[in-house]
Length: 342
Image 1 (cartoon, one colour):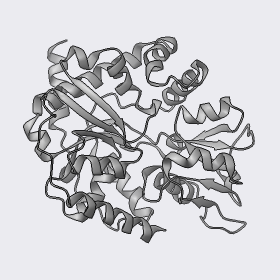
Image 2 (image 1 turned 30 degrees about the vertical axis):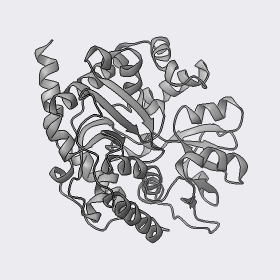
Image 3 (image 1 turned 45 degrees about the horizontal axis):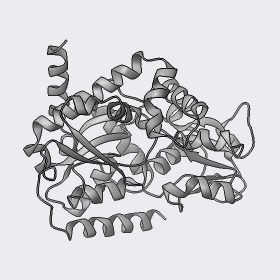
Image 4 (image 1 turned 90 degrees about the horizontal axis):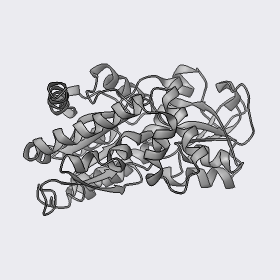
């Protein structure tokens, strides 16, 4: 499966490089941003707060949001020019490095600082232990994706358990597309799966599963999702990128000071199919694990740890220098401008 994942990534990269880049502008409007998110989740609450409370509009930015349904597809959108900015897992940039993309993707601002997935069980467990997964099946998402790789790291390295199909091993399934995890869990004999919010709480709300643990709480700090753009886009749209980050920082500040009720009101337009109870539970879940980074600067130590997780999964066998794929200069300028404005 690990070899298959590498092959799939290679095919994706070849596909991307086969396209010509569609300019370097934001369509016809230099202040318009076509933003591809890896998935739609309350894990990315600051983005939706900025959209729904008009922060982007106040900054004269027009943000067009689309769901890429995976970092691999989001990276494809960036490299083919179908998106200007991607909210993706940084690992996608590392994979593209192996393909030799000239106009490579750069992480310019971090949003989340831990894994955003939660363990959902078929049966309610008051005191879940990771050893409970031994001899059981857990659906972890797509091979090569951060949810599956972080879960593998938690199982193997942190909890010293063995992955396999034996009675004394954890059967980790990585053959399911991320967007289909909940459906597969519901209709299969798997005892556990990993889901983001509000999907996890929606499933619990429907009586089809129980949220029993947080992968992010167990794994610790990881630069899980960040904003990325190609080198060309960043060079030609510095002011747009900085203003965009300032809006995200303003939204994070809002979340740090708002009540749960206020957050729910701000997020509801982006999650109309989820109940208020589910949204509240989702917010509380992410607040409890300190999911959102207080500022957009990425720490080299966290980036290094992310690469440990990738190497443990067998997707890469060596590390790439921090400065090759992370540029903190835009985040630094955004922070300085925010501070100067009081």
